[in-house]
Image (cartoon, rainbow over all chains, first blue to last red; front, side, top):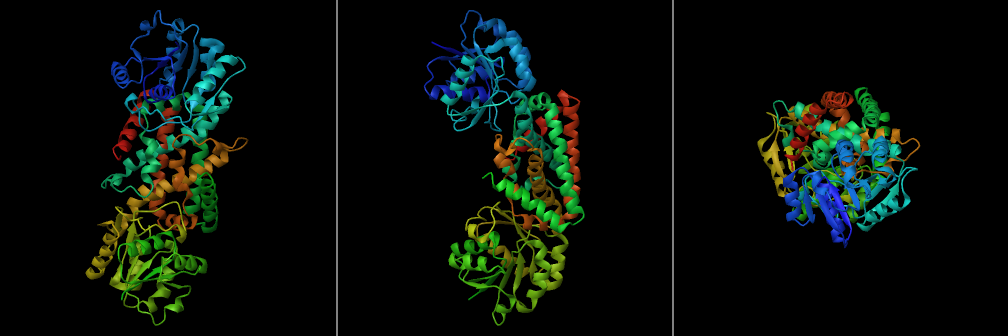
Length: 280
Length: 280
């Protein structure tokens, strides 16, 4: 029987475990987390079959596949300490940052490491909210390098298609530029917006008046702070670049309003509105 | 029988007409719009009982209530030309900007004018998408001044509670500060974000990779450009002030990332995430 180890028993790792079980995965799912409470919940809910709260508990166990599911900044140290226990396993991860992190993990684990990033998530966090259908119809980006072992890549790909996801390959550095723009930047924008409205809530509680669309628009600002701190810091360069472009767009719009450039403002809004509508 | 005139037969005006009819309004609903196509659709769909495509058609008709539902920048000129035809009517509006516009409309119409702003909306526009349940459970802000006629205010209030809305009174200038922050700023933020992602889509079509939450997050950027041009220009001062506060929040976050201030960054994100989650 196969043994799959999920390192970091949170919302994403828990959802993957549930998704695998729901789709008939016949191996055992082990969960490793320093947080004993998370392990307890995951065991109670049948999300994992066996819970470990320290690395040493791995001694003597055969592990076939490892999924790194901690916040991304913990990957390096987790990987180094994990390495002696999972010598022969296929290693993959579900982190939102790839780039040089992929090369570093590849250095630790060798060609059996396959970088992955499921484009699914929620503002919810914690293993308690795990959702067996989270990956259904979602994209999963895998970021193989020229060193990646083909068989391992195939196996990781099958794991994801098995839970209903559509797998796409991408260069790890291109990945970070793309998701810096379409995911990390929007999160930075949303977090900042809530901060700004809090700043302005002096004398009147502005949060009492969420306008049309406000809840949807700001939902991602409720995302897990540690996860996003790690993403922002790991993908710092791309995020900062994207934020610069964004501030320029904001200043462009600001000028059009400031100078009451009615026609240009209409053009600007019509163009972006049309673009957004085209996404459905 | 009462005659209610909706000036500007679009999504919001059409939705109000449908909502009234659904809730048993027994008067006639007239729709005035220069766009003959909009009138045609509204008649065909039973949204209005009578369509007018020029002011002169109002001659000889008794109008009891007028609802201004054009983009807000058209209010002044519409109001002046409308005035001779609707001498005795109660006048209200559904514009997203109040402030001095309320005082100007009050100057034209006198104490029978009652400023209003339903906090409901969609990215959809056009009378075709009108929704009879749009205002159900939504807030409607009315902005009476010391000159506002009490009976008119009561009637407008009843119109809104009759379609399921919760009415709240607010000073017209406070209204513009509040909604400049919680509605107009988020729209500016969303429009700019789409523009920035378009800018960055050089070589790779970034819109092919909408991350988790991206669709919800940017939905409001698909809103009607003319409506929003008008809102931005009419509430320029508050919007620019709010944008300045927002850019400061963005720069604050940027610095924390730039300098890898791990702890402060965690605090920042934890604080806004908690705030956002508290809204549900």
